[in-house]
Image (cartoon, rainbow, N blue to C red):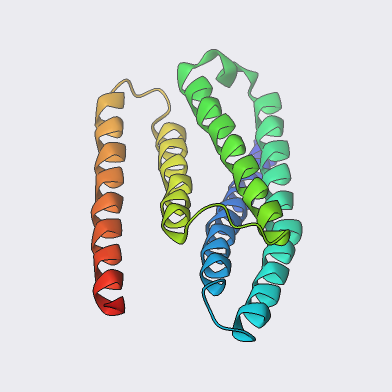
Length: 181
């Protein structure tokens, strides 16, 4: 059991690192996108620095943490294969698959920005940054409550949090617009 707990602890450490990388990477996308509206030479200097930070964050933290999260997660399933017979695990794995798709999309934006292609607005990126939070909440709730059949309560909490994010986002954008006018 000690080995399992060590694997579980490492799994959690790498989950935290993975999410930290995703949160910060998308934040760097926002700053890089907004740097495009600056005058020269500020635009070029900021863009080069932010793109360097994006690349290092992706290569050193975000991608390795994702790989190690998956490795230790699969290792835990090897230790306790009966988890695969439980519906909560399959629901959690569906959200993890969604998170992997999210990460692929984030990587696609990273590649575009490296090529100085800015297809999405900073507002879209701010919304995108909150998607990882929704995945985090769903995955943690499923992992903590496991076999609880009261998924309605968990769903309400998740929807409530999404609503809270939407209100905060609306107020923040309103404040930014008023500041710029």
